[in-house]
Length: 173
Image (cartoon, rainbow, N blue to C red):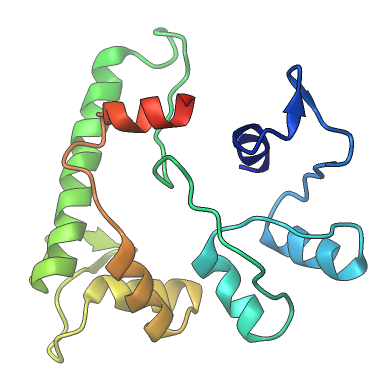
């Protein structure tokens, strides 16, 4: 993301990174937080709601926001048709699309979505809150308010196997 932002902001000259910007890879959110606090990194870019619990604890502070020009999750496969046969990839994407739709319906309608996560059925709660939010709170330990706020910003594709042409053109601009 930092390299894409640098290109968008013109921080590259003749295809080479401008020397005043040195990007360091710190592998994960824990590595980023450690590096920003030990001084080996000045700042980092990471997903808002993943970083928020650390900001809430005072371990880091938000200094800005840069929305990505692409969806946050992409599905990729090996380039070899031998390793990733087109028919199997299509079947996988079709199945994934079905589960994404059911998850999205569970958020919108608070009705049973007909899937299981860790062998537990995902159904709407009697008190009217999202079962999907329950799972995220339980699994990742995020505060319910943050999860509900995040889920309110999330959109789901009709077909995970398709990439909207505007995403491609905006990314290439």
